[in-house]
Length: 448
Ligand SMILES: Cc1ncc(COP(=O)(O)O)c(C=O)c1O
Image (cartoon, rainbow, N blue to C red; front, side):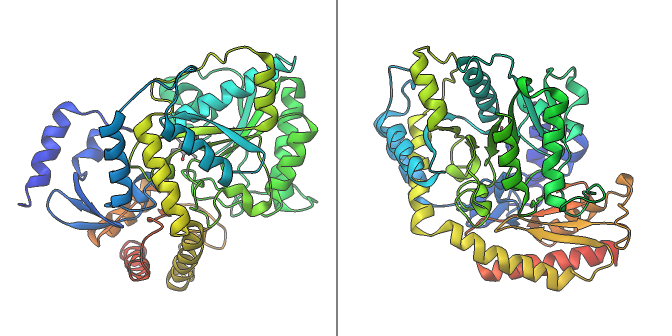
């Protein structure tokens, strides 16, 4: 293809397509992807790039996995779609529920399927509110989440999301949503005399519940590792303390495993790292490795029992719930995850990536922190390592490093000056070493 092929496609795209995070200026310098080979993407000019964010954190298996697209095409041929509303089901949805029950937290055995993460956030908020009404506590409706948490951009998802640039264009926000500080080990300042940074960060939840009134709080939603907020790995004592606080005040703990689910962090699900069981989970992305838009929620035995005993229908529904084709691909993906030990691969390869990045960049004066868990890492760039002073947003350091990395064949995203490195779990060692080399060179090109 000619070098102009991509530019010509971008012009046509601009004429008729509005994109997520729509911005003409950003898009004018964008990419049009036409092919995928394992951990690599190919653009319309035929150039290859390492898929540094696995698509949008979802494509853990990489492109071109026959097992996945054959499962989808078999199901499309057999029966592309049938309703999943009460009174209808399909064998692939049944199989998927059975498979999920085996691998999710032991108290979670029933699943409701959606088309993605944001719909799953809404579904969990509605599930939590419904549960408390059935329990005779109808005032428990509020949602507490965290600053820098990302839970999608449906109206309720946006209100739970704690990255504030997502709010102003669409306010007023729904009442009853509040945010506590992120445990952010690099930046969080624990009050003087705290037992530990993790406990202090978790105790922010207790303060918020007490400020709102425990009788009004339905749930606390958190990603085990904050993804879009900057790959923020919490302290080891954080989630166990969160669980205690949720139990003390009868607040449901919702684990948003949309990124961390299905092996990404080196365990099948993120809270397993700290031996904590949530009341509700939500998942999407890697359940189909992005080959089909499918997500869902997992509901604890106690909540399901309460729903069933009520005898009342749950008036919540999506046309594409339990989509047979999506469920077929998800079943094939869960088989692949097990056969190829995705959690184990993520653990070992993630370690190689993190150690490589630390060796190459750990001493750089503008690298504040290199962090990660499994195959999700980030480099936090700062102006002054000693004081943790950040760069002016106008300097656009993260964006400049990203541009340099793209010139060298690595494609990812940033949140401010936190640079995400989360390639597919199947990325081989040679490519991992190449990522390290590219990011070291790109950092030096921008910051010396
Ligand atoms: C943790 C988390 N929750 C929810 C979402 C929203 O998912 P979706 O974009 O499929 O609506 C995302 C998307 O990145 C996410 O990372």
